[in-house]
Length: 188
Ligand code: SAM
Image (cartoon, rainbow, N blue to C red; front, top):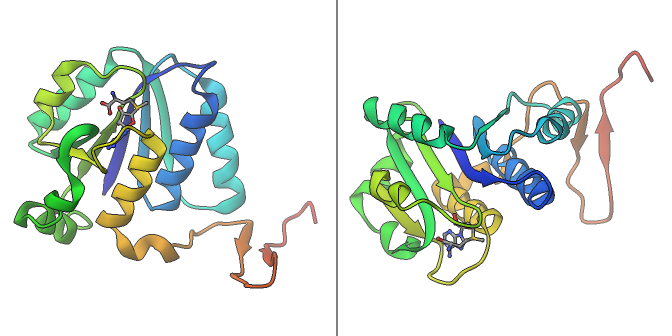
């Protein structure tokens, strides 16, 4: 079970990037994403609409600025693992070789809950200290969306084929254009 925590959401500036972060998390089978920063009802609504159309039980929460501390501290109290994605961290290519990563990959689906933390403009130093691992998806600056997508794909390589229950729309993969199966609803 994976939860993503995104620190420092700003309603105006991060509208698209935060939505994309949620969509990547949902598509890769993350259970829940929590945003802290400015509380944003529109962000929640836009992701709920995607759930209605494309299915699944993905959860989204938007909390105020300093709630990240409570979330991380609770996670630590429960002795659950925290991975912070940052360009300053240990390169994922190295982390992947460790028994710790291999253990996480094997166990988390049934046994463990993992918190993946990504930042925005500036990440408080405390996050670096509280995380079990600070991991870089390459030691070059890029984006939280890119970092999360690549990391999730390394952690859960089989989730490329995920399908969700209760979907109104389902894509039929095709090399020749768009094929979408539409569930019959009362509106049709
Ligand atoms: N100075 C920031 C840092 O610590 O990575 C860069 C800010 S970047 C705009 C926002 C977020 O994207 C970061 O907090 C981090 O979670 C993620 N990010 C950017 N580049 C990354 C990389 N190479 N590896 C892992 N995460 C990265």
